[in-house]
Image 1: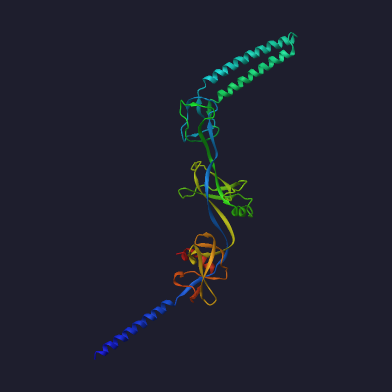
Image 2: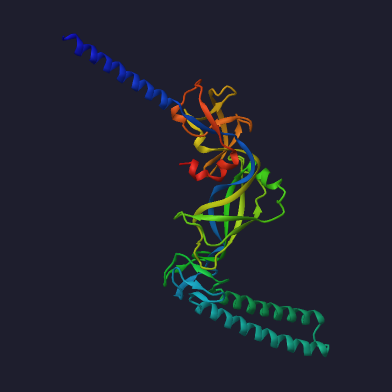
Length: 360
């Protein structure tokens, strides 16, 4: 009588195992979505580290030595062209001007007297020429004194923003001493370095005669509100880096940009006939990228690929695939190399149209 419950228990165990096996078989019967790489004309946005410069950025220096009498501007001020900024004590230079004017007046009188005598043949023509030379020299001394006096007042050569003051009122200045710097920020020159291969693609492109429009990403990760254009390329490559400098010009009507800032240039690079695959279809092993390719017998084969560029949700494949290959689109973690699977082929155009969905 005790054997009957044991027998019933064994039957229950076998039934349970059979049910689980049946469930596992059903779980394994899955259809996997696959697609094909596809050639498309597209573009990528490349970032280049950039240095921002004022279109005019100069040093203001003392043209004469002397005591700094007055500073009529402050650090960070916007100054207008011709505005007085610094005044060096002018007393000595005013005295020199008065002295040179008096000497010029005396030379003028002497010249006129000599001219009268020469007209009467009292003095020789050489004496008249000497008097004329002395007079001309005296007038030149007046002009020179006026110039030195003019240099005691330092005015803004253009509209701009003043930087740090290097001197204070009452300082004893030497000729050529740095006072401050002045920046014209009405527009900005943004310099960035481009690799030789990219330079060649740019210069040999069909639109090389058109000014290339670029954007500027600021240090706060926000785009500058004005577009720029690439206006010039420097004449030589840097032998150490293999790069060449491009210069883009940006209008700066709101004065947001300042000399010395940094940022990143965003430049669109056209890609013709690029082979595209979804990023989701790839996986990495030791810094190498792979996909699962499905052969004609629906068997999964692991294959290494070389990625050239990255676009949102997409990779541009340089090596390893062709448009006829079928690549696993989803379920990468559920299959293994050499496994045979059921597949459902999704057209590449459908995949590209729903990238956000397939990227999840």
